[in-house]
Length: 86
Image 1 (cartoon, rainbow, N blue to C red):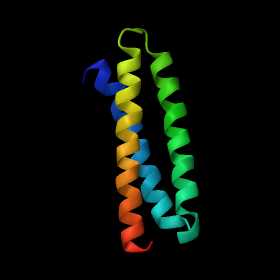
Image 2: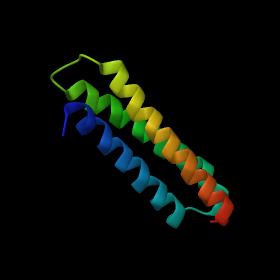
Image 3: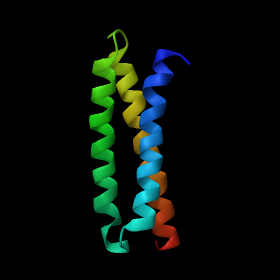
Image 4: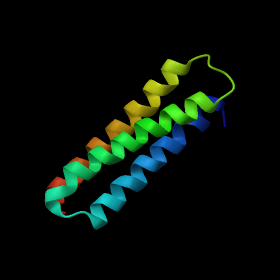
């Protein structure tokens, strides 16, 4: 796996796992709040992973792909949770 993918995929996995946990554990009135917390965790995780990499080349592009992909995943999760009434 390239360094680009190895720094992006874990963030997306955390976003998916966080969305599932929110869908299972959160009250319907708290879904938006908890998904925002998951997004904040994903952003912090992205910074940590990107700054820990030895190469800083392409840093902004990797961060944008990581956070952007996680935001799309959480937006889809929000739509699913709202439509299912979870």
